[in-house]
Length: 127
Image (cartoon, rainbow, N blue to C red; front, side, top):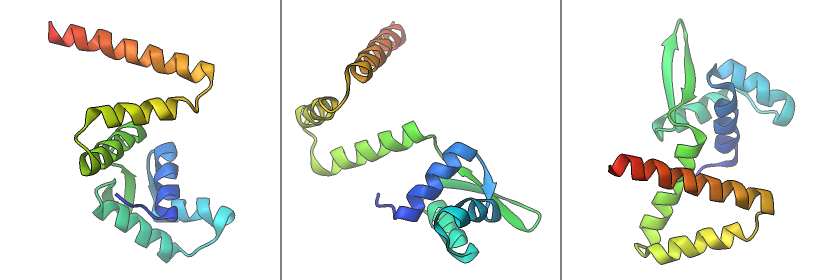
């Protein structure tokens, strides 16, 4: 899924804020990058149509919130890209190893701990 720069910024803002209406999002970005309320409303609507935001009408305005958390979104992006380009799991694992090479020692230790927790949870689920 391809996202524009403002779409990424808005999505990141909503992951942090958890929920907001168009005016709140506009106020946040007005100071940082400018732009009109209409532009923000259009961006929120596009993200909703892409299934990335949920919305609920309260009074005369929609309140928006992320349809999934950041981790799930990144996982979906990775699944989408790997499915589109390769069913070869070795390529996927090689890409992760390549990315891991850019991490510092502390980040690699965190990754190892995450993998170990996943293994432990998976073995519990398999029983």
